Length: 601
Ligand code: GDP
Ligand code: MG
Image 1 (tube, helix red, strand yellow):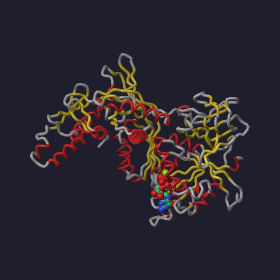
Image 2: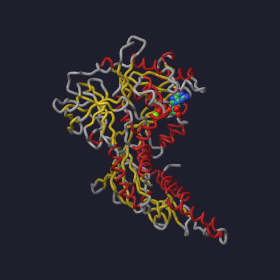
Image 3: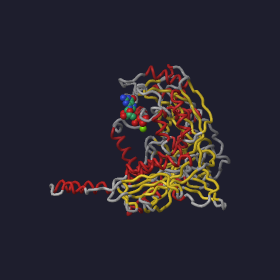
Image 4: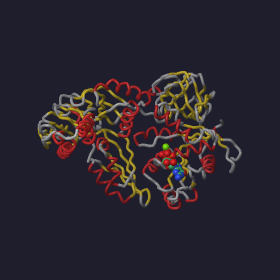
C-alpha cells in the first residue's frame, strides 16, 4: 500500500470509557470481522485466549476503509488501529505504541468527563506530536451530558466544541463519521522507501504455537519474508519465517513497506530477543542509526515471592520461567527467608506490574503466595570502600556505612487546582522537592517534583487518589540517584527478628514507622497460647514495643459437651484460618499480616 493511503492511529481513554467496545464496532463496520462471527462469541474466544496466555489479541488491526464522503470518497484506505496499554508502569510501552502512530482518538465518556488517565495519555500523545481527534463516547446513555463535557474537552485541548465528535460505541452511532475523520485528519506516514530498512518494535508477545510474535511499524525501506533481519540493540540476526498483518487474525503477506504495520515471526521462543523499542533492520543492508527510543526495561521495585506451601517452590520457579517468556521486564532470583522459607526475589517495573504478576501466578498457575513489602534498590558504600547493591532490606549491611544512595524519580502530578495544597503537603511528607508548577488552564495544574522512588512505591498513588477524589494523574521517570540518611528498622516477634518485615526508611521516620508497624501487627496477629512481644528496633536499639496477650480459653471449651456438629464446624473454621498462616518462630502469623502490615495506613 502506498503511504498516502495509510493511516496509523490509536485510541486513548481512561479505563472503562469504551475503548474496546469502540474498537469492536470498527472491526465490524469495516467488515474485518464477519457479521455472523461478531457479537459475544467472537469476544468470548478472545477472552479465553487471553486467560490462557496464548495471546492472539489484536495489537494492531488492519482495517480497510473507504470513506463515502469528503475529498477521499471512494478510495480504499488502510487504517491501522494500534492498541496501547494504559498505565504509568508501562508508560514506556505506551510511548512506543504512540510512536508508531500519526494520530489518536481521544475518547471521553459523555457521562463521566475527563479523568486522570485521559490527561496522562493526552500529554503523552502531545509529546509525540500526534494529531488528536477528540470524541465523546456513550452518547446513548441517559446520563450523558455531551454539551457540558464537550466544553470541558474543547477547553482542555484548545479546539472548538463543534470539532468534537459524538459517538456511541455501543449502538455504532457516529462511528462511520469517526473513521472518515481518521482518514481526513490523521497525516499519512512519511519515510524513505529507498533507505536501508528500519522498523520499530512496539510490542512482542509469546504465543504457545508460533513462538514470539513481534509487532512492528516500518519507518524506512521494506521487510520481506525469508530475509535475514538484524535487531540493532541485541545484535541478533534471525530469518523472517513469516511476515504479515493482523486483520483480525494473522495473515501472511509478502512484505511490509514504509508506514505499514504488521507482525514478524522468527521462531525465537523468548520475548527478550524482541525488545519493545528496538529497531529491526536487514542483515544484508543494515541501517547505521537505530530509531530513537530503545531503552532496557529496568526493574524498579523488588519484592520477595514465597509459596505459602513450601512444596510449591519448584512450581513457582516453573511459573516464573513461563511468565518471563512473555515479559522481558520481569526478573527473579532464588532467596531464602528465615520467616518465609524458600522463594524468589523478583524485580518489577512498578507496583501495578507486581500486582499483575502476582495475580497471574495465583490465578493461572494455582499458586498461593506471600509477597513481602515492595522496596527499591539501594547502593550502600561501606567505610572500608566495599559497595553493596541491596535489593532486600534484610540484607542491609550491619558494619560501618559511609553512605547510602537511593533511586530518585521526576514525578509529575496533574490535578484540578483546588487540590494543590493537599498535593504539596503529600509530596513534602514523602520527601519530595518541588521543581515547578504550571497552570494548564484556569482549573488544572501541573506540579513537578523530584522524589525518592521508595516513597512512591509506598502507597503514594493511593494517597494521591484519595486526596484528590481520584482526579490526579501521576507519571514518573527515573532520574539520578541521591544520597539519603537511611536506616534499617527490624521487627522482632517474640524476640526474633522477622526478616520479611525489615524495612529501610529515612532516619527521621524510623520511630513513627516502628510504632506504626508494631501497633498494626498487634491488630493483625491473633492471640496465641502465650504472650507475644512485638518490638521495632534500629540496630540493637528498641524503638517501639507492643504485647499480644495470651489466649485464656480454648475455643472448644465453650462447647464442651455441646453438640458435635457445632464442634466440628469450629474445628473446620480453625483449619481454614490456619491454611493461610505462616509459623514464624513459634508465632502463627496470618498471610494478611504480611500484606497489610506493609501497606501504609
Ligand atoms: P475500555 O476499558 O475503555 O476498553 O472500555 P470498554 O469498551 O470495556 O467499556 C466499558 C463499559 O462501558 C462496558 O460495560 C461497555 O459495555 C460500556 N460501553 C462502552 N461503550 C459504550 C457506549 O457507547 N454506550 C454505552 N451505553 N455503554 C458503553
Ligand atoms: Mg478495554
